[in-house]
Image (cartoon, rainbow, N blue to C red; front, side):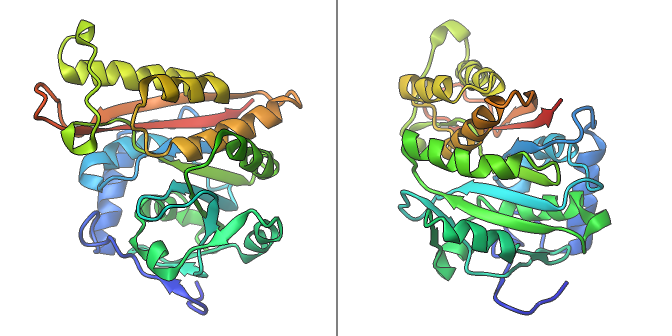
Length: 297
C-alpha cells in the first residue's frame, strides 16, 4: 500500500504486542485457530484492547466472525484514555502502520464525517499515544489479509459522550452500519477492578471476588445482547461498572436502535469472556475482556 501522506507508527509494537511481523502473524493465527466462525459475517464486533498477552486469545473469537470477502471498510471506534474529549475525533494520519502491513484511512468517508461538523481532529501526539484503536490494527490486518489492497479503515476516537450525543452519533453511523460492506469494530475492555482503578464493587452473594466481577460483567453483556441503549445506560448508572469502551458501545447500540426502527433484524452474541487474573482479596486487581459479534438476519 502507498506510504504517501502522514503515517502513524505502530507505537505500542514491541511492548503491547510483537513488533516482528512473522511472530505476530504466528500468534494471531494460533489464537484464531482456537475460535469458530459460527457468527459470520459480522456487521460489528466488540473486542478488547489490552496487551495481546492478556486478551489476544479472547479477541480472536470476535475477529473470527469477520468475512473479508464482504468487508470493504472497517470502522474502528475506540475510547479516549489520555485526553478529555466530549465529542468524537478523527486521525490526522492517512496511513496506519502495523508489523503486518500498512492500513489506509478512508479519506472519502473522513470527508463525509468532517462535513457534519460533529468531529474534531486529533493531535498527532494524541493519535500516537492512544492504544484503543491501535490494538485492533494487527487483528484487522490479519482478518482482512486476503483483501489487503481492497479495503480501508475509518478510525474514530470516541470521547465521554452524553446520552444525547451517543444518540446523535448513533444516528449518524447507522447509515454506515446498514451497508453490508462495512464492519464496525468496537474497542472495549470490561470491568477494571481494584483499588488502583478506584472500583471495588463486590457482591459477596456471588462468592469469590472474581465471581462477583464476572456476574457484574455478564449482567452488562446480556443487556448489550438485548441491543437496548437505555437499559445499558441505566446499568452503567446503577453499578458504575468500569467498562472503558462504554461510549463506543453506546454509539453502536444507538445505531442499531435506529436501524431497528426500519425493521432491520439484528442480533448480538458474546462468544468469549476472560479476566486478566482472579481477584480473591481487596488488594488484588484485574481487567475483564469480552468478545462478541453483531449479525444481520
